[in-house]
Image 1 (cartoon, helix red, strand yellow):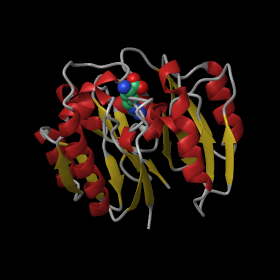
Image 2 (cartoon, protein in one colour):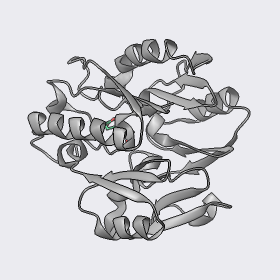
Image 3 (cartoon, rainbow, N blue to C red):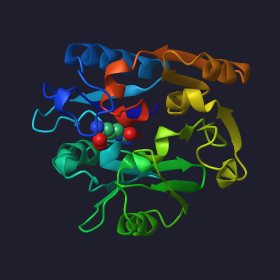
Image 4 (cartoon, rainbow, N blue to C red):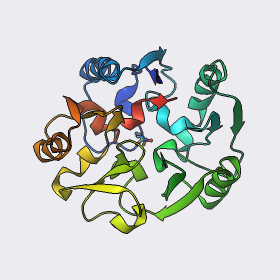
Length: 251
Ligand code: CIR
């Protein structure tokens, strides 16, 4: 059974880095986070939620703190200085997990956010964003030398997974008009309208998907392929420029 690590919403969440809308309702964000954790159970995952740390308003976005593949975890050095102190708690939690055999950490000047990394099959796609630099990508290559690392230049979005996410081992969900589909050669690319690009970030496992509420065309695209969906409200998480994958690290 897969394991998902999450971290609670801190009291300081309204001060999150890179907000895309104002007036975050922290209490509502907590309700939405609880719904997210319950939805992970719909995907048959075992969950563990770390306590929040009010020193770090973005600490619920654990995805950015590590990249996990094939039993190895690379602890990142987040691109936003305000987020660098989030990683030790995540490292401790991963270190005690029986499926993690190797843990290494990024050193300065490298920066890398987990939201820029997407592992599908024998490839790891990595976005070169404002958060992930060349040294970060080089370290990723070294750590995951058994995978083919495919670098994707990014503009206009915070992270790679703002516009795409894995739908299993051979399929990817992608917002039309963002990354050229040819980048995902050999995969079944499920294109969704650019107007629904927020829904391109979903959490998939075992033929089921959690997606953000309010994206009917994406939901239909998925269900037409026989994928069971659960849609959850994400309004407050989104205001902090967060989406579904950002809230968990899955082993
Ligand atoms: C940040 O600016 O880092 C946070 N407010 C949002 C992080 C979202 N994480 C993700 O997409 N992986």
